[in-house]
Image 1: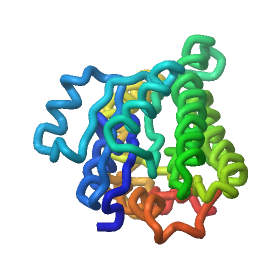
Image 2: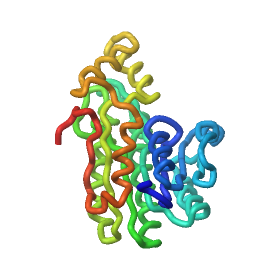
Image 3: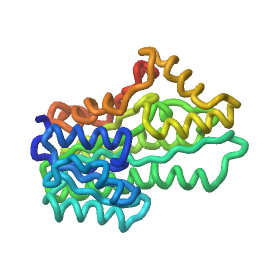
Image 4: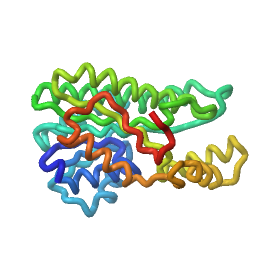
Length: 258
């Protein structure tokens, strides 16, 4: 158990990568605070089989300042401290650049950038106050490594995650808080069905074709599974990564070489 008795916050934990990481953290001995904007009843159904003494489920919106305070306060009230933040909450949208809207820009940057940054800041403040260091892992994307014609706002938001990860790592190093990122490639989560439908609309493709093509284009020949991100998430949260900071690790089947 690499994370025995550690206290971890996982945002976007209702489905996909967030759920897989939360479950892996529990299996590695951590006590986990699962945060999602979805109703708490959905979280309770998802984690019905989990050990409730090691789990706290919170409905919260990371774009809201009071919600961010509630996340940290509830974690401390329940478990006494916070050692790990897996900063995963995000939204996706796309459209041709000439048709992009202020509303989509505001929504994507509110969650993917503002929410990511201010939750990271608040958790880092708590880690610094309690002493003993900590581990922060921000979820970026291969989309943050390069722009894409139909995905300008999302790509820019994930590039911002990578940049903030670097800046925060330098700022927080004196507090022994390691800040790193993970940049997934194409991962077969429920969100990809929505992504595929958007590509079908804007590229005039049949449903399912884009998803198949992007999987085939990966050097390892397929889309990744959410559970294939969990090894990196555990490693970066563990003592094995004590001398690693300001890095964003590609977990993408070879799609991007850096």
